[in-house]
Amino acid sequence: MQGTDSDFPEMYNISNQVEQNEVSLEGDNWGRLMDMLSASDLKGLLFICAQAVAENDKLTTEWLISELRQLVSVSGDPLQRLSAYMLEGLVAKMASSGSSIYKALRCKEPASAELFSYMHILYEICPYFKFGYMSANGAIAEAVKDESVVHIIDFQIVQGAQWMILIHALSTRPGGPPKIRITAIDDSTSAYARGGGLEIVGLRLSKIAESCKVPFEFNAVDTSVAEVQLEDLGVRPGEAIAVNFALMLHHMPDESVGNQTPNHRDRLLRLTKSLSPNVVTLVEQELNTNTAPFYSRFVETFNYYMAVFESLDVTLPREHKERINVEQHCLARDIVNVIACDGPERVERHELLGKWRSRFTMAGFRPYPLSPLVNSTIKALLQNYSEKFTLEERDGALYLGWMDKAMISSCTWR
Image 1 (cartoon, rainbow, N blue to C red):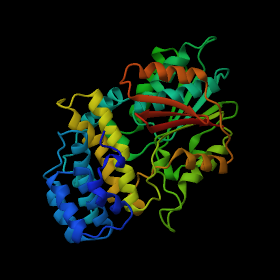
Image 2: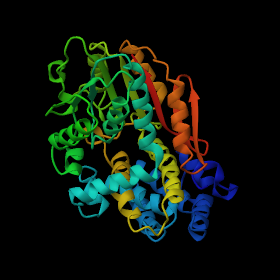
Image 3: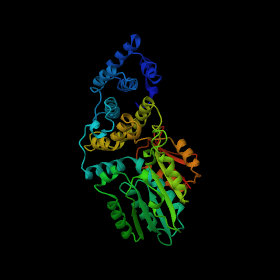
Image 4: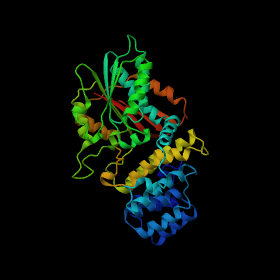
């Protein structure tokens, strides 16, 4: 493992000094830096480069970037691959080109069908997305098990894969399936990946529902999530409401972005609470990049995605021809956005579950216990993957981890 700071030998104390903002590239420290270069200490050099960027030390940054370019590789081991994208983030940060994130990645825009295939490959080889969808679906199925009309409000429906699974599950419910209404909101990136708007998802889900003999209605909301109002959701009397926040709330800005930016993160939660939902599902990545200063954000991002890239190395052979595309189009964009962008341009603003708990509690929600069936279902899922993936139930939430690091959390509210 190369993903933790504790792996550094004593001779690399310069990297620990960097984390404390105490480094000076003079005297002994300069000698240590030369030792790191001789040893090709990629992680240590990358961290020092990030600190130079934080201090706007352009001379040191440019020199280290030129040295690091010789050590990184999008086709190398997990550290080399991740460092290649982290380095591009630093380059974009220095060039103030974070808003041009695709250009910063130096990769051609994929056709929509290609991007969808990359997302599908990632979904199949890593349990992170499946974990989120299955845990949320299990909670929803449990909460509406006696209801005849179920209205699901999904604030980021993407391809709709989550609801294909749930429609199948509810079609076999004793006593017959409920009528299912889905209100879908989504962003332009997902529309690009689909090759079109929400009507594509609606048609796909309608065909699935018809084949399963499930009464179905689809409501596409043609507006950005930040602009959604109560009347857009089309809530009707007598229906059970399930609201799904799967890996999307961290895209919503809050008060930390700037004085001129509305706090849509908390506004959405208050709006959701006003619906008196039967259940609200929350699935989020377990890292803190929202309000952390640049260097801390860089270290947090490195440690998190180091685990992601290592887990990919276990599930997808390094020589697999699609692996680079999967990492480049599905992961690298997020990485570069976290590192290179600031203010409203930074849309990847993750928070730890403890912070989400505070937000949900302040909005008036209370925890909704997870069904033991959900836990057992996820455990069965993980049997198909590496034993290094872990599952922990703690304080009413499920955490999917890699080794000893929590990666994704899932919990429910009402």
